[in-house]
Structure formats: structure tokens, C-alpha cells
Length: 145
Image 1 (cartoon, helix red, strand yellow):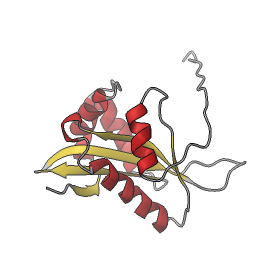
Image 2 (spheres, one colour):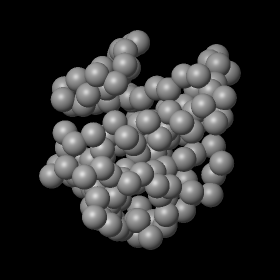
Image 3 (spheres, helix red, strand yellow):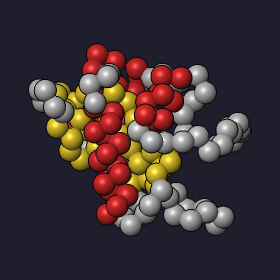
Image 4 (cartoon, helix red, strand yellow):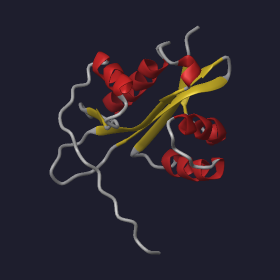
């Protein structure tokens, strides 16, 4: 059965939160809903879900970052496919939905970042035609509020 790809809706927050936990992101449903509301109301972002038999089986979020030193591109901010449905083309369909959005935005470059330890994800992205262009180290500093 082919997944149905559609725009993400606020009602998807529970499913999106549940799937995010499979990759180790521990936002609550309420926190996910807050983030989702911000994404869905920002024209520089897009998000889609894949459904199978009416249940969300995967999601993708992409956005247009703005850098002084780079031409416009779209970046995939998150992609998760339910562990029980991986290998069935859902991730590919979700990436294709974002690629279509890139064309609508007249932006010819799609990027993503992937943790070094996600070797299977790297193979998936390479099979879709992505190529590794650099490696980075991410730094963070917590600021007092």
C-alpha cells in the first residue's frame, strides 16, 4: 500500500511527538504542538506527514535558512519514519514532497544534516542522490534566562 503524503496539521502533534521519540527527541506533545504551530504559520517552512491506513507513519520538516554568505537553499530540519514502516518508500515520498516545494519556491538546492552515528540514514540519503559536502562539529552554549 502506498502512503498518502499531505501537509502536516496541528492535529498531528501527538503522532509527530511519538515518532520523534523514536530518534531520541523527547519533547512532550504540548511542546511539539507549540513548535508545530510556529512552523505551520511560517511561510519559510513546510512540513508533511505520510499516512498509512489513516495513521501517521512518518513526517518531514524543511525550511529556508538565510545566510549572508550562501545563495538560497532549503534544508530538511527533520525526517522520521516509524520503525515499523521503514524500507517501504515512505521516507523517499516525504523527501520528494519537499523537493516539489523547493521547485515551487524556485530554490534549486536541498540540504540536510545527519548525525554521524546514523549510518543507515546516510545510505538512504545517498541512494536519493544527496552527496556529502562537509562535516561539522556543532557547538552549543546554554544561556541563563
